[in-house]
Amino acid sequence: MLVKPIWLVLENNVQNQMGHAAFGTFAALFSFTFIFTSFTDLGIYHYFTKQMAAVPTFMATHLPVVLPFKTLISLIFPFIMLLAGWAIGYQKEELYYLTLVGFIFTFTQFTQFLRGALQAYQFFNLDSVMSVLERFFLIFIIVVLLYLGITLESYVYARLASVLLAFGILCLLFRKKFGSFPAKWSWQQLIFLLKASFPFAIINLVNGINEKIDMVMLERLASSREAGIYAGAYRWVDAVMMYLWTVLPIFFAKFAAHQHQPLEQQKLLRFGQMVVSIPIIFVCVFVFFYGEKLFWQFSNSSATELSLMHLNLQILFANVCVHGFFAIYANILTASNWELAVSKLVALSIVVNVTLNFIFIPVYGSLAAAVDTLISAVLVSGGYLLYLRPKLNIPVPGDLIFKLLVSGLALGGIFYGLSFIFTIWWVNTILAGIAFLGVLFLTRVIRIVDLKANLFPKK
Image (cartoon, rainbow, N blue to C red; front, side):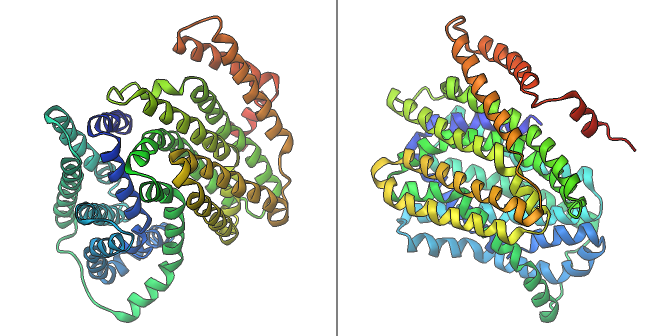
């Protein structure tokens, strides 16, 4: 639980010491590689994960065929990235780092795949240790480098070293648990698996573009400094969005279990909207008033850079707020077998985002990327709402959305009023949180009867 917040603090220090330009270069290279991670296994990992949940023997049957193929394409992947980087104009030094980042992703993805085998054979405790081992090594190395003085080159080496250490330990444990790595070649079986996994590869590619294209375009169309400033703000977006990606899968399973029961899905949707939206609203309003407090570690940044990071943060958290309101609608649609409809909306938002980026990033830099992301999020969220009744026969809970909006505006008013009474930001935040809870009961967003019905259902 402590690994992620520790890493968040450390990465801020890394960027502060490296500088925005150097870190922006790394962020762009990392994002560019992330977009193409589906080529490291062509969707095999996600297909295996889904199948193992239904057929426990699936891994044992197909692993010997997949493992040699995955090894081959994983080792080729960094050189694919080298070619792709050359195609978009990266120079010699950048191509060198891009190749190393490609190897980082190769071993990260391979580690994830082998962890799937541990999960399949129910070595859950071992898998949980392996899930944080790489980050543990990285934290230790980065602490040393921060003391000695960190550079872009040493940071890339640190990332690669930590991944290799974790991968090496996993390989030793894998050999101990399962003996030699199984391997056989069957074209027929392999082609069957690749056809089945192909949709997952496409989904991963679309999601990768949707998540990371802004950083790449910023560095290419503006500057690495602009990309670094954007990365400094976006880091907090990633941290807060982890709440969504933790909660939404829980509701996904519940929506899927009731996909032929619209009334049950409607009840779950209202409760899920409340659970997802309320914390996000509070965090987003806090960022609007006190977002600059999140950049306390950037002692080497100028006042202009800090101001730009803060403005980026506010715009990006408007985007977070949109997701906090409407991501659950994508969740219910996907759980009800409307993945294609959701993918089309995401693809449309990518086209809009990329088009706007080409037009405005050269002029407005990181601010354009933040605004374009917000516009795309609003567009795709509107599509989710339009699909809800035609696809699922569930009405949009407009009354609840309105109450949440009113509660959010009231919270903003509370923060604003408290700023005239107290000058200590954390005191105002605590008082606003208490007051916000009262507002939620007054607006009947939270009702005791709903909490009892969802948390303590009758058997």
